[in-house]
Image 1: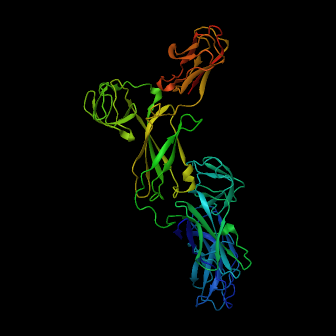
Image 2: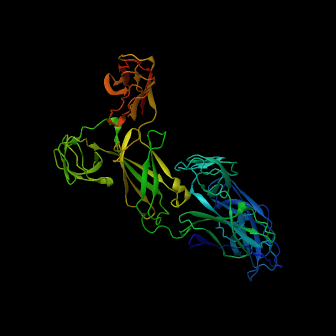
Image 3: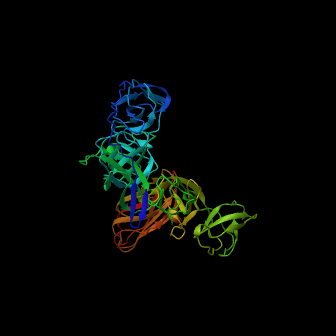
Length: 580
């Protein structure tokens, strides 16, 4: 269908147009307007179908079309058949064609050159791309538009919405664009998008036929762009060459005055630019993915996989899933007891870790900015390790360096076919819930119909926190109104509801201290947790990072002591902020 020509791609649209001339001696046949509906076929239930027949001559001529016959099929499984009765044909007839459609304007041939008889039974014949004779046909107009969201199943649907729970659409990205039901119930309907969330499109007006779980949908540009016109197949025109993007093409029959058939009844065909449309798919496993992780602002306890891409889009058409493994430390567990019993140099493959026998083979560990993998437990405190795992650099570590045995969380992100290279792929994000964790590194591989890709890795050990801290979001505040004075338990205790790791702790005052600093002790269950100091002339204290603090325990009582105030002016209206 498409041939690349540099910045543009040449689209060659092949189509079947209706016969313009009809045989003068083959008048319209008679057919009973009461169709019979019964079992023994494969037609789906709960639908109305329209039928018409035309006589044929022995030399391939086709006559005038009969009246339309409607057949209402009751609800039920796909087991129905429709019988047309009372067929009578002109004397010059040698056979007849049968046409069927879901609407009067959408008739397609389902049977050709049937032997003459008084009835015909449609058990579920496959529709062909052949329209009935049309004396008004003069030419066909073709149009195109770019697809923004690839075809995907409608797992969310109602009279005014459609969506899929696995999508991560940018909010309101598709406002004013067109959503089309491509398959299943409600096929062919198009609606303008009023607004959208990450998973759901909200329509400007209701569906005529509400989609269901059998339906699939796409999102495309709002309007059709003119391609070319012509009386016969094929018709060629140019479109922008954007490899990996899906283009939608449609054609409409027109008369000599360029009055077109209804757009709603026109066939819409999808084609992957730079690919093979519905032809050749992936021949090998996909390339190794490149990706990143991000902490979404204002969404504590979440991490997003983003920036997914490949060096080449070859063999990515049928990628249906990405498997992501996060390697992390549970910050609610506190600092581990495992540590180096002896120094480890960059070239060392054997390390001494205490307590003895505390780590199993295959465990992935973090020591400072480096990630290891335990390959063999040699007994006691000696281990053989693989150094510099996950693209970290082997480095020297002093005795007593904490060794963090990392946990592993796996998540699977789904994709519709032809996703990569589409505009939607540039905005893709996949959220994973993982609260109060420090993510050290991650792995990812993707899978297509042939197999799995290589494993891509990313690490975060060069950050100040030696990883990404997901935290949980929110904050606690403790306030003291009025002028400050030296006092233990200067405010009512704060009771922690559930365990939390701490992002940071700081304090502010409304009036600055003069002469000496305000000194504050934060306690958890009576034990000093951290200290803060507001210097003279300032209204804000130092900030204590939470990475070195133990977690807040569920049910713990947090109190504050004022250990020092300004000599000339004590400062007033203190607020201590514990960000989670």
